[in-house]
Image (cartoon, rainbow, N blue to C red):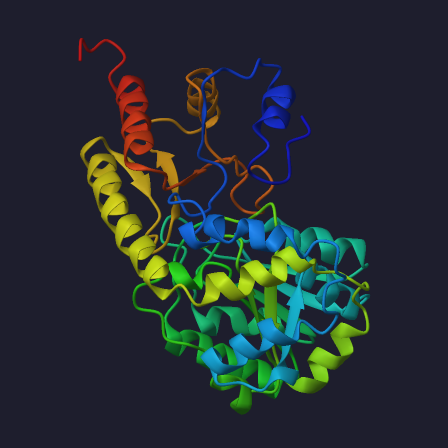
Length: 361
């Protein structure tokens, strides 16, 4: 069976399964903010529309300026991209034919883009169910490597790795002349995040990728940015298409990044819902990954293969993210986004039906 390579667009998943897409359904496969875009974005939308006849700023000067001030980093260390996916693609092009290490499980786009650029790929598999990252275990995989892809917090587990572990990895990679590509697409969902941006001065091999798609629920706009040494940014920018980021995306990015109250509200909401869900999972003997963000992996220990649970949920209009294309997982887990309160209630109701099929409740 050919599985869809990403979450969202559930019609393709149902097509692959040979099922009709039910109505209504709840898509738990897309791990974006359940609160939706910031209200200010809707309020300013007509203003943005007035700008669509203008070519976008090819240097994204105003958005870079905002990021520069908030992150205390020079503008020539910032590259704006058409979502994190474009930035990953640019990095894979730069690494064409080279040896890369991917800490798995991980966002499937690392593997896909590196394969397309004829990279030699080494997989460093974390052991389930804890998915603990141990720098000493990783060391042997780094021999002769040109780059390491590391997602923190991890996608699909939602686990945040200790800062000391990542610094240890940065030091090891520096000795081996290996780039560390630190994908922080979900960093702003963390309530205890400590920035790695100051380490860009200490480690010339560090590259940070961030996405505005997830926190601000704007996947249809596509916007992200990369932070690195100016020489790396300059080299990557030469590989980038002209007009890669549109005017509305640039304006929306400026607006979103200044809405700190929205970020805090989102963090608190997701934290509350996550605790509520995890209490239910524990009570009903489901295993979940130790997520700190807006999604998690779930596994029913009472069955070896999760396919039956997956199919059951789809029939009920509950759409999780399959993990058949996450190396090392091969469908043994299902990934769920944390949605709104009522949607999470419906998920728990359906999982209760699965766990207790003959119950009158």
